[in-house]
Amino acid sequence: MKLYYSPFACSLADHIALEEAGASFEREEVDLETKRTASGRDFFAVTAKGYVPALVLDSGETVTENIAVLDWIASQYPPLGVPELLGRTRILEMLSYISTEIHPSFKPMWHPGRDAEKSKARVTLAGQFELIGDGLKTHYLFGDRLSVADCYLYVMLLWAARFEVPLPASLAALRNRMDARPAVRIAMRDEGLV
Image (tube, rainbow, N blue to C red; front, side):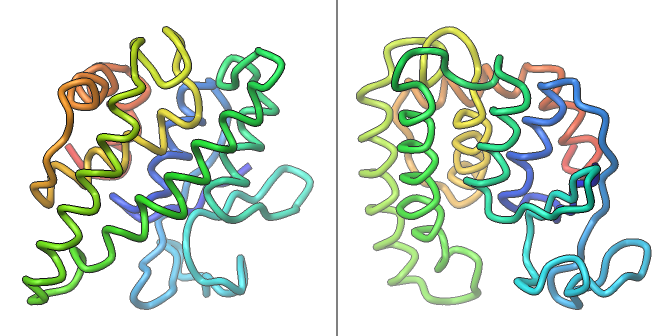
C-alpha cells in the first residue's frame, strides 16, 4: 500500500498510525500547491479531491479522508482500535469531532494577516481542546493504549503549539507522550519535520 501525504498536514496522523501498526507501506509526498507527487505524478490521478491523505491499498482501491483512512487502519490493526462494545463508535465519535470541529478551526492560522480571525480561532480552539482535556483521565484518549484517534489529535496538538493555542495540562502531557513514541519519531523524520 502507499500513503500520499504532505509534511505537517493532517495526513501525518495516518503516517504515525501505520508506523505504530508496523505496517509495510510506501509513502510519497504531495505538493499541495502544484498537486504533483514527489515522483512527478499528477495527484488528481490518485484522487480527484486533490488533497491528502490518500491511501492506495494493495487491491488498488484508494481510501481518502482522515476518518476513513484511520478507521481502515484500526480495522486492519486492532491494537489501534478500542475493544469495548462501543469502541469503534467512540473512536469514530472522537475522529469526527477532531475532523469537523478542531481541524477547520485552524483554517485562519494558515493564512497571512487575519489577526482578528486568528485571535478568535485561538479562543475557539482553546475551548475545543479543553473539552477533550477535561475528560482525559488516562495516558491516551481511551485508556493506557494508543488508538488512531490519538494519532489525529496529536497532529492538532502540534498545530496548537505552532500557532500558540493554549492547551490544558492533560493534552500537553499527551503531546509529550506522543513525542516520545518511536513511531512518531520515525514519521516526523520521514516527513522532514525533525
